[in-house]
Image (cartoon, rainbow, N blue to C red; front, side):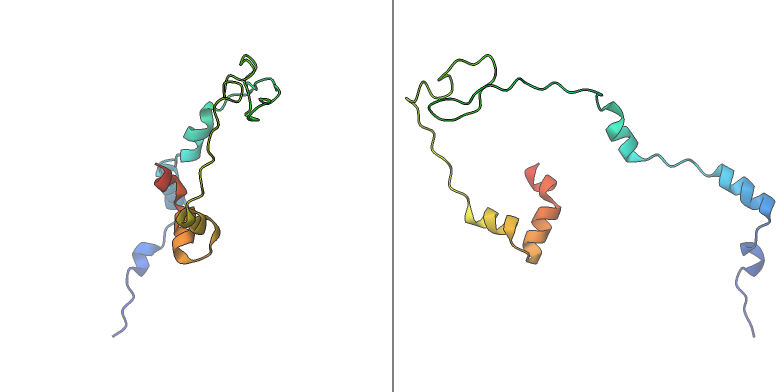
Amino acid sequence: MFCNEGSDNDILDDDEEASMSSAKPSEIDPFDTVYSNIPDNTHILKVDENCKHCKARKFESETDGFCCRNGQIELKQPEPIPELMRLWSSMDADSRHFRENIRFFNG
């Protein structure tokens, strides 16, 4: 016995296809919502020279030595964490997973 499943129901006339396509809800692109409020212009701070003592970048209104009290305070540079460096620079499965989901881990 030959079984032809749903052959009569699968064929639609051109009129039926047109009416079904107009009945489909329009899909909303989630990126339209995200990118709809981007400003047309940006505010950029004026460039000011770096601190003479610690070479920190300064805002325009900061006085000289504001960041380090004219060299009295010395900030220690943190040592990189070996495991994080491996995750960031390696090509193994753990590292790829880390980089692909970095927003999740940062959250």
